[in-house]
Length: 257
Length: 252
Image (cartoon, rainbow over all chains, first blue to last red):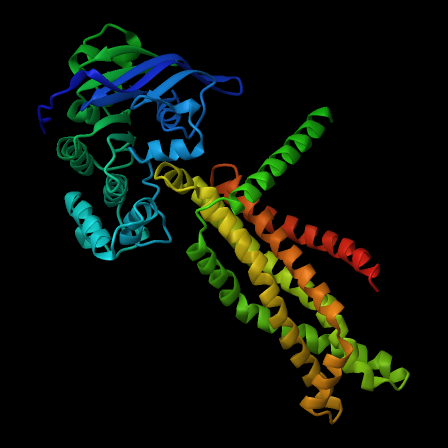
């Protein structure tokens, strides 16, 4: 699968992370990390499990607070916003969770309606239905509209999770391990969907993964988290054309060379 | 030892922050009326079969057990007054609260903690919804409203059980039983019942939501949250019962 050519506007930084540090007790997860996400790009954050990749996107979306450093999203300082300002900003950020985080007491339709009804209170019933059906059709899941999340497969849940974030038309998407726990064919489908979302909704995205096939398929740029810092960044080929043992070990493991 | 004291103090600080946040969110718009009504239905309507059975048994057994003592003094005609005061003042709120702590408390604790484990609470947060207001405030309001209503219902069912228990031995009409019942209870008894039910309802809601919303991650956390919701709620209900009894003694 080839990634469509997307024009990345490197003069327009949508997420700017400066010298972020985060620890949990004595465990230093991130240390003085810098990261920029440009308008329209798919940025893949690669790293081993437990290196703080998910923590990073939770810091960006304000779900966690950093110990030090500064985060700007769409020009706003995340750590200086009050709760209601943060909630406003989050409407511009779509967050696709590792386990999809679908509301399991609601049907697929209700899962998608939930953020829409609560954030766009002036929509009519017909408009809500149209929005939900449009987005579900876009991720190829319209036929599952009345199903419960428990009736769906892992790949279908991922698609619904992505659809639920897209319903608010976010400017930025964050994918936390989008292909984790899926079979290779479904992984390809999800990778294709991530590229489609970038193209159709003109989003800038951060994709957290340790799946190199996913990184290669969806990433315009890749950064690699090693020892609590981003030590390498560039295209897939630039990253893995390296003599660094830690990078080579990662590559060797993924492709079992 | 110092570590233990420190962790207890930290827990108290968390509870204080939780309660402050609850009262702040309670008075700040937007209000979650739809969710409150839905939760009232979940809490009230779905507990009816269990509550009905328990209320009936308590009224029936209490009357049955009280009869021999009154019979010794030839005072069985006082049974309706005795059971009405006992049920309305204390038994109905206590039984409702204990059943609710077991059924509703465990349900809320397990539901919220499993939502936390599966990141559904985070998903709400990032999609522009205030999960504390939507999940916690609505449930606490629902239990604070729902348990007093259930309590009135349990009183009625308990008195019915009492009447049937009397009817087995004596020829007493339904009308004369309830006339005696309403003659025996006054405004202060009803107020005592409402006070107890409101306090118990708030306690069960607040404790269960706290246990669920602040549970540790992992499936073990779900079990612990449900268990802690029930045990802590029941313990606090008994503690509050003692305090309320002492407080109401002033008015008697």
